[in-house]
Length: 136
Figure 1 (cartoon, rainbow, N blue to C red):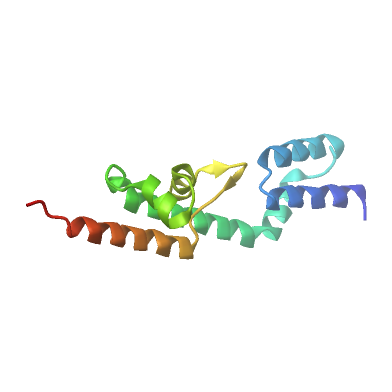
Figure 2 (figure 1 turned 60 degrees about the horizontal axis):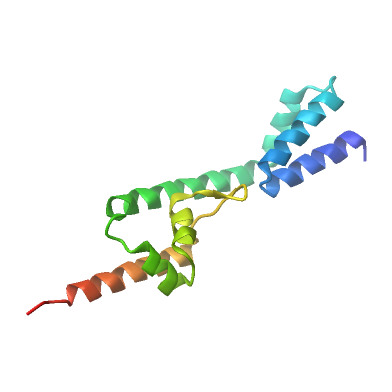
């Protein structure tokens, strides 16, 4: 395997591991190391090779945006801290990061389908509990 192929493999590995800064630095180094290469064609090959992963990431982000749009109007009354601690055993920051799709260590984390089910269960439980309250 040539040095160029090894560098391409490393570039792909950095991409798949969501190491954006290292990916950018390595790509820049490759452009300097191999000035005669057509990097437009190389990046096209790279994108084609990683298309499925990119497509899945875009779909995941679209789902996160949709989730946030649904929750955002109620953020003042939905007790994220309570839900995070009692239903997930996590912090409010953890839950908020996943609802908003906030990057953490270079990767965007979202709620998985099972976690969305847990979140919905929490909302229904809390709603039922609030609905049963009456003051005499």
